[in-house]
Image (cartoon, rainbow, N blue to C red; front, side, top):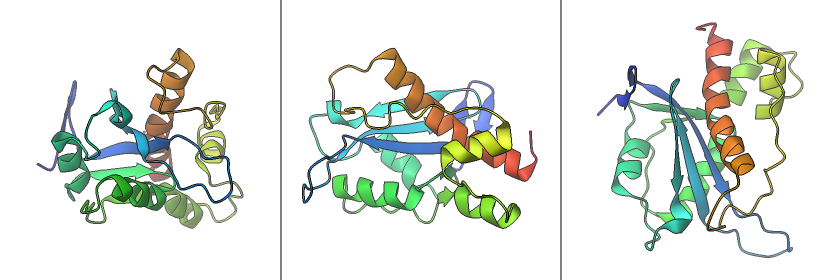
Length: 168
């Protein structure tokens, strides 16, 4: 506990995001989280929850999410945690999900766009494609574009944290 094994050592902070099949009808109940993305500086893992027979989270993922000593960073993390609780009501992330938007606003008060795409552009000078944001994440297979989008979303949160803190 406390560190996530990686190819180049261990991490005590990871990038984090989730994807859910979007709803387009007013009043339609939100769908269950279909995908959880976890990124270290050298690896991104995609947990395709919709492929599991059970609604509950896999033990390995639940253990990581509930490990308070591993910080999970991204944008909109509180919404992600709420969505994951629809899948696992007793999930307790123990405050380990950290929304980098708040840190970015505190560090750079003049920032006007604090969503992930805006942070990547402002802090890293890169363009983050959001073209797959309304994709159906409950599909049986993902296109290469969906996989790239999902991996980049989790990795971008971690990269933005590094840029905000001046670590890399």
